[in-house]
Length: 109
Image (cartoon, rainbow, N blue to C red; front, side, top):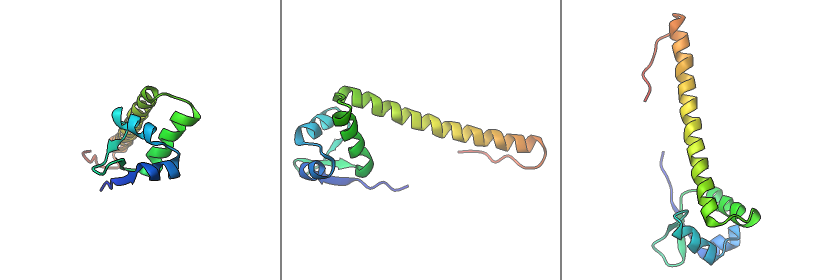
């Protein structure tokens, strides 16, 4: 799957998502966002997902950047665990079909 990183200026982030320059600099310092090559800009993979989530956690819930970092790391880990669970569930179903003698087992990735 191809990833597209989009560069947004601080002004665009402020007008679209309500994040001011200080918030964005703090998020860059904590590694929550990547600084772009252009001055006063960030490079974001999914801006319509990532930036509203950052704004909501930081402004609406009043969480400091440290807490936002922890929450996003936990969310990422949960997503990886859910993907692993889905893969193992599929493998278990496949094994059940094979044991019953009605199918073959295909090696996973």
